[in-house]
Length: 396
Image (cartoon, rainbow, N blue to C red):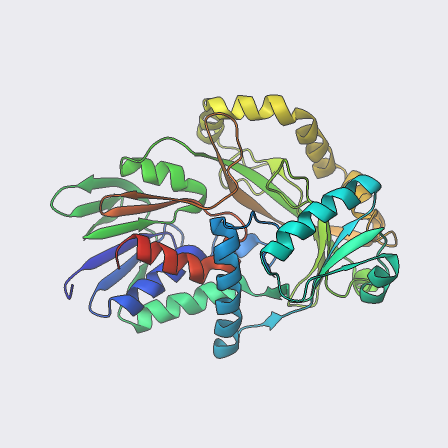
């Protein structure tokens, strides 16, 4: 439709990838991205670990498994085309106890079913060959797991949207969505009238989707992930990435060592309940956000199941020694004295009414509105494939 106007709420990597995909499929349409901040990639995209996942963790056949595999390949090619930093430095998922070895075997079955390229099992000798300073009983080695500059990718997507005749409008905090003959998207600074709307509001996805009439569930509960940076004297001890075997009860991957495209080595993130949707530190508190969390029945059901883990994570947040105790199981030579506190990010974790932590991507269709309700890791890796999926589901 030549005169069609398509709105996208959110200038994170997923929203921008979708806007870019729409411009490719509808060259005559006008695409406008609405972003409340003054830049792209201001929140989750700009605060993650930069890992391009290979698909080890996700249930075969799930949206995550399908879109991570395709999205990772598309992202690699896009970075090469645009000259964006990308390095396949590889990942070791290491088991350090007999119980973890058992869980590692289950993870291997899932990863092989997802056809993770180059994946192989290794023992203690193989671990040392790949990461000479790592310790463990067994590991999975994923040589194609990579690192990149996701904010750089997001900026390139925004450039593509503008080059195709679209617009990225900053300082536009959505406060209302009125559905009449067309959709009127309002903010305190004005309004935009669109024919179709795609909501990719990240930490605020439930609130913005609610303005369009979507269900209350799942509710977004913010979890802060805090990073440590390894001092230069010890940063060379890790060549690529070293991860623990994840606990299948949680969607979080555990504290791990990750090399960045800048050459720095980071440890983290942990996972503590944030005191605001954009609560990057203990000093950032939102009474409104906390009230919303406390008023959600699923929060109390989750807390009843996992309060011990929550206390452990909080202790690690305030104690550098406690934080590094778990990490040293994998690289014993890097201690608390060898790291300094670095940045943090906030994960938009979707939580169902029954207290279940939503793991897979969740996308709702509401007539002319499509709402991306849950897009956690590996959403950045999968962003271009998510864009294809949303465009298909939205009828573009």
